[in-house]
Length: 264
Image (cartoon, rainbow, N blue to C red):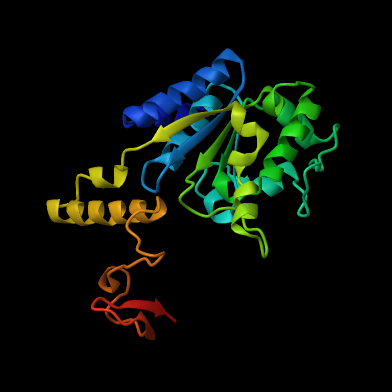
């Protein structure tokens, strides 16, 4: 507990303005006991993982229970005590609109969820909305509370510019319909946004490196937001992504003054 308090005191001083707003909102919701559902939105490099781990440490050093989950195993390893959401909530693999999680009411996991005050779910946009709705129904039943997610402060995290749910052989409309934004739960969600690129604030970075990183980040954001493309073709300088000593087969897709290549 002492180590957690020291880390909280140290890292709270490093929060930027956007992170401070999100930190206060989440911790305030836990302290008040009013519950609430949030979505922490931020592009890569905005400090989502740093903020999640700080909030987890704050709740835990105050004696509360906070759980961290993620849609993928790789993302879960970056969170303090993180597990995949499917493992934590026993979400069925084959899921539909009426599914619930396989958590017996008298199990140790059910007791843990009854005592939990805060839950994070990172990389949420890549999961089908039915998974969130199944967890919502299960927590309401286990905690005997009609509020969203049984009154637990629930915070989804992610970036909608990245991977959306995978619908096998699905159309564009079916993929969009599977997103969390199409779930009735979205009406209950309070957005929290991170808009400052923390990677550009490194004191060890030279002005030239900072400019290159900023150009790279802006180009990535433009692609994610549907800007900077021509007829659905994304052009990217090869020298920025391919090392000089890498042997690749490049085949031109278009015969233009500035060729566009596919890498095999």
